[in-house]
Image (cartoon, rainbow, N blue to C red):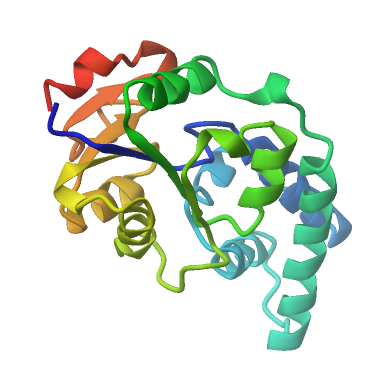
Length: 216
């Protein structure tokens, strides 16, 4: 097997926190007097907090917020989101995720998390998964968003494996592009119609096996 390390995005691969982002943004919108749909919410996936806020304010036709007011609103949303994820339990781990990561470790592969979320340590702790990863690179240690490969290159460096011997598991188009930009293989989690640049696509880690890594 040429692959020596597996790097996992967190949200949408190991756990689905999108519902909490949606609830927190929805509460913010409601308190400003408007609402938005789950279809609109799809546009926020993989988008930074401030860019998401700009989209939401646009949907509500709110055009008069100062930079300071926007910072306050984004901070309020994050506070509500943080309160919600602090209640998470291991029951929220996506099907097959714990088992597949464990099988990678049992096979001698290095494992790492590469996520833009600054709440990654909290989430891993609540899910009782921290010990399953040799390295955790998150939004606190990177400055460039995906599709820049910084988060995955730092992950490879942290586990001491060359990028060409790493495979990234991602559910977002920008994440797949980031892996490829970093010279790594990319396995998409989701729909093959969407994640067209991935080397392979599965619907979830419950459909993934070590043998499939050999086909990359």
